[in-house]
Length: 132
Length: 219
Image (cartoon, rainbow over all chains, first blue to last red):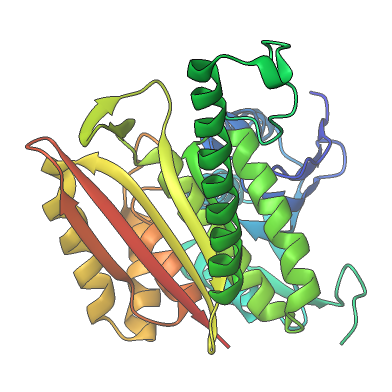
């Protein structure tokens, strides 16, 4: 199967799902009006990947904003990965959040409380390097 | 639209213009001056109320992007605290998307509601002494009022920790709504606001009500 590569837009995240390495990345903003349309190909891709996954899969999530319409779709991505883990593979979610963004940290904790996959919370510096 | 510049008149008559036409031109001049005064009054009013952005009319995904972009630039110049900037952006985004999705595509003309092709709404974002306020309004089906009111009252009754719990439960167990949010929008807005959601319903006719929402994001 081939990698899923989508360039980010002001309303949708950059997607980089590599089936060869098990490195999956979701980065940027996820605030489209119709999230189901955007996430459908991602969920289908994971479905297919789950049939012959790498022994180790790591999903890096680094979102600046996401809307509530995306939040259920993101949960669906995690559920697909839960399935990959249930078949004896190692799966990790690496949830990135900016140092002062406790709301994003809480959002990651909310998912970690629902999904049966180990989450690693990773604090990063401000992306825009703006003034303090 | 009426022209402000009345120096170009189509009669080409100058001083020899007919009394009837003169009366019309005079009418245009007076109403233009009134309009000029009222737009100045509007400017003053918006300035006094520290309005950062306001819009009324048909909504599209493109327009929402443009409004969000304008808000983001505005906030960068005004608000030092990135946490508040993000919260305001989040609330504005969810409120605009609510307007877009939960809308029964009606407008008022001549005091009566009429159906339109696109969702319509009104939004106003202003600075307050404690932070920011995000006001939105739109028509909705009268039959949905009780359910929305119950949802908002429940959200307003919960302290922050229980609100977070409700968010988690809704995320984990809730079903998808047609628009994808599944009832998370208002919970998220309340969480980001940190205050109570102020709302009102104005019944218009037997099928339609106007819903207004005021969300305060405090520093």
